[in-house]
Amino acid sequence: EPEVTQTPSHQVTQMGQEVILRCVPISNHLYFYWYRQILGQKVEFLVSFYNNEISEKSEIFDDQFSVERPDGSNFTLKIRSTKLEDSAMYFCASSEMGTGSYNEQFFGPGTRLTVL
Amino acid sequence: DAKTTQPTSMDCAEGRAANLPCNHSTISGNEYVYWYRQIHSQGPQYIIHGLKNNETNEMASLIITEDRKSSTLILPHATLRDTAVYYCIVRGSNDYKLSFGAGTTVTVRA
Image (tube, rainbow over all chains, first blue to last red; front, side, top):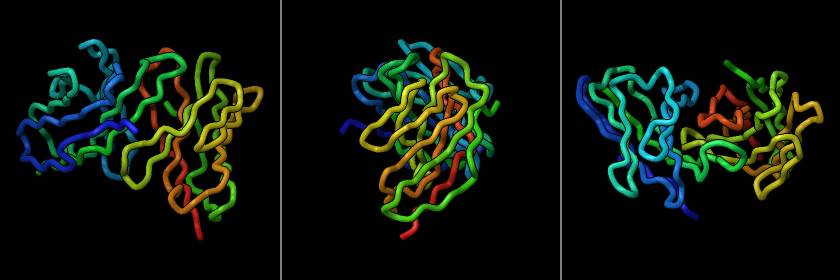
């Protein structure tokens, strides 16, 4: 069964450093998403991406965040200058459709980001 | 902007059906009800979704009341591996994002 994969599983970084989290969505999916979950809190939407453009983003997704599809298979989330409060589990998801009825999102296993 | 209300937690006996309620009294006509679950900090897993008709797949059944103000997710034969946080999410047909609440922590006991 096809699945979303994410690398690395755990990333430790120093405050102020840049990190890139990587995701390989399901191959025939066209819509991609990032969510995060701070320990003990809710899963929060960050951004959705389609056709090389951001289709929706949350207030959390400020100028320190960016997303990119650098090639035909990867989807990345970059955090330019990490802060302590960026420590969280980051989940990538993908879906065949973006809106409408048949747009179930399938999630990857997550990358745990720890900012020291 | 919580659109759903779920019990904080519930227990279920292994092998029995688990019925998970969700209230969404302000749901509008173009909004779907989605159910996801999250097993111990893994990525959320899609279970089922529906608009107004009852739905069934290999994982679960979704019963939506006629007025659409509430729904019930049914896991027909709960196993220990069904222990997870279950999220009921209302999502508009033009929305990209999923808005997760706190969900219901379901513990299946042997």
